Length: 144
Image (cartoon, rainbow, N blue to C red; front, side, top):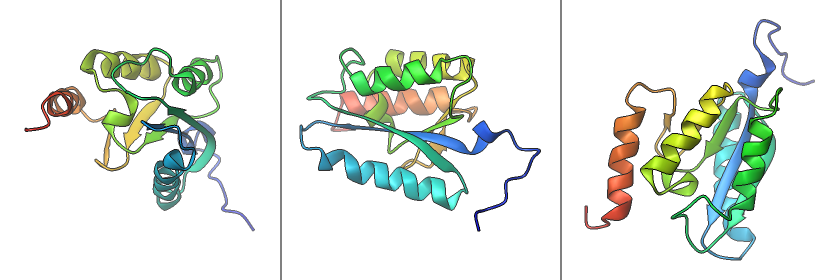
């Protein structure tokens, strides 16, 4: 018997999508981060309704990332199928602060939050902009 769903909870509150990006063309390289996101969702009683991924050489830009573009198309539908996006860490979603903030703003405008599993942090946190700025700076300067 499945877990009983509280009728007072919006189903989108418990439905999640995962996003993984790998710098290699090996399919298995996105399986591990997706599994980590699935484990995180399970611990919180959330359900994964879609997995999106990209195998691209660099995360320096969001251009050309068909998995991310597909995720955004689904997220901006009039009735998005999920209310949360799980990804392992900020660098998997975007390396440039401007891209990350634009993604966050687009998703929030559609009622969707982003959860960064490794950092145990999400886009609804009041310190998100500061955290994202620090993470972006660290990605530019590995000596940090």
